[in-house]
Picture 1 (cartoon, helix red, strand yellow):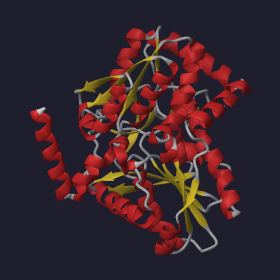
Picture 2 (cartoon, rainbow, N blue to C red):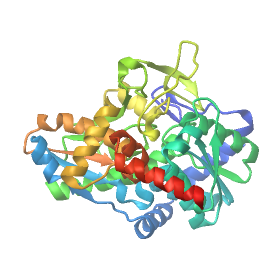
Picture 3 (cartoon, rainbow, N blue to C red):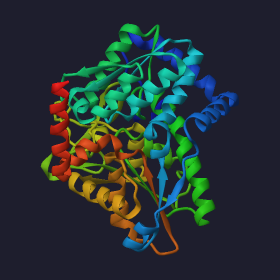
Picture 4 (cartoon, helix red, strand yellow):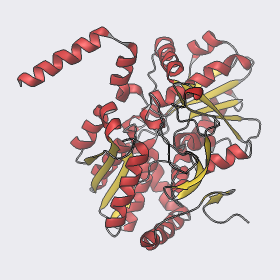
Length: 410
């Protein structure tokens, strides 16, 4: 019998004693809402009226014709409120916070989309909000930081370690230990100590439920493959849950290949050979760590994918062979982004573009009577600085310099 909070031998809740009662309370409330149909009904109603669900499943006819083989469909989480799948989990946890009677929320963010979603939820529900974000990610995702602050959130720059997502998570946990009576930690992905992996996956399952119904309506049969990028794994678990019971559907998670797996500058946990089992940040999974258990630096052009670990649920599904993993390099991501924009007029987030890379590589392997789904977890507006820099666009550089000069002059 598998112990609660474990997926195979992955997961658990390795927490300091001071947080024991806080997690006990959180587990009690989570079990309560799971068994209360009225909660899910309230959640669906709010997601419909406030967050534009269900998001559409778009047939990418031009890309399908370009690559040949299977028909390409795109699940449009970019059209969800705040521009990504993150609102699914955050709105759900916001309703939970209301039941718990807490007045303050904290969160970590890498790409900034979870931070924006949390700030949005806090504004909607009248909660005090603090967002922890690595200093490097703040520089990469300045537009998202701007919106978080304008919605009333306090954004704290984390300067420890690699100054990215893992360090932001550490700081958020430190805050929670000091303020647990009044504060709820809105963890953004399917990682961390139980019940967070299960809870985030539960809220994100709305993606897969919708996608399964939509592909049957649009195409008449289940897809042969479903692709999703994987940082912590929330968008991947979201869509995969719609098809986990369909063994004929190949589920593919795409991690950050960075500058290439041989370079060591990547964030490929399950697609590479550099990761190993470990316990950190409250749970057991596959981590990028050295022989002494020290977490390694990671790299990705996408701020949301450079995390050291991965969901314990995905580690279990990988170990069982139910989900296979691949890695996409920064260069491949820019190429996939470019062709998607030019063929379909759709701008994926850099994170999402990782899934497009692998789908494009494999689309021609399928027959014309088959389909695949790419989960587009977010839109690329937030990445305009990174993308423009990667393109080396001279007009954009000139624009930034000109604006900087005008700003200096007041």
